[in-house]
Image (tube, rainbow, N blue to C red; front, side):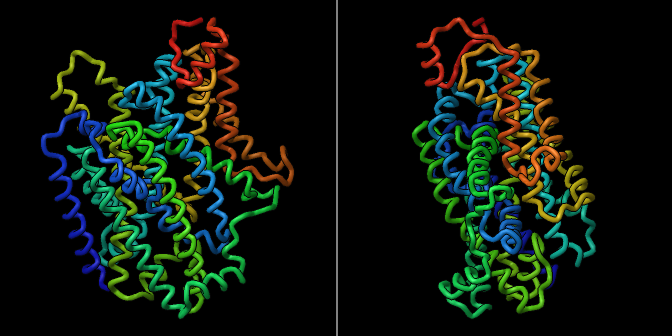
Length: 502
């Protein structure tokens, strides 16, 4: 199909998103933007969060990784299922009890202002890097598939996509993206199923026959039993637990949608529903990756990794499937990018600038600040996308998980310390500890051969980072005067201690 025709379908799809945004953003205010007035439907949030959790990286990189790693990525997903239960029954009750707009305000009530700012700062860093890495991958594929044929520069493609996202999130924020994410998740999953069907047809195999071939070639292996490997199943499952807790439960973007639901019970339903859907969806992505690995050699496709899926679809499948693939790819892109910009705007305005605490600003002035921050993050996204283009990493999902290990680790340590202990921390030292932990992890990762021999440190770097942060906080804290009974109560209610204890 010609690039011009594909581009027309993209424009039509975007027009649909703008229509949804216009309908949902009328009569909105800052409360609508930040948490959707706490009136979001939990079923819509759960379904829409599938798209946010997966993103364009999952759409492209998970199938692309099967050729080298079989189905071992599913080990992480099993761990994530367990992590979602921790989010539902430990973290969400804390967020709802404190009636939080920003989840990092918990750190303020528990440890102090420096801990609060540190947590928010690490979220801004981690989500900015992660979201722009995801955005880069999809922009690159759209550039290769459509825009190069129209002689449009890469930076113009990235700019136009970011302007599109700004247009439909500028006013409505969370209230809008709950609906647009639902639409986009539906399109992405429909595209996934259709692509699986066509590749399976191209192989002239039934589902059972394809699974047998995948098994014969070792492509359907889920569990790795090599204890020294970075993919050892115990390490991967444990890492999956903490990845879910950190990248969903301690992430303002993901939790912003959850706490937009009216009640705690409905929010818990949302998380549990999401965790179950994710198991099936990721397994289908892995199955697609196995089919692509079987199919690519039969049609002369030599690409591997992130390039195999688009190469097969855009060169060897019917024109209509190409359209569906591009729409599904955009649908995978937008939920991660629009939610990220919205959440980063919310966190920066509330946590860093403190606009909700400033009595000198009226509602109109707060809205004006929010608009400027929103545009500022879009500009930052553009710069970072260009930076990722310069770096051009061959597997973006590996890069994103590596970045998460460094940037979410301090958040994991901060929240764990707050919830599991009643100790009073020296608040002014918290930023130094949170910065030192990832630096130590960098050297552990760099010199792991010297330190551990054949043992490979993989995704458990996130756990090590969190543990170092926790240990550092313990060293600069003192025992509270509360007794053991109070301690038990504190752990049960989420560690809602006050800074006045000593």
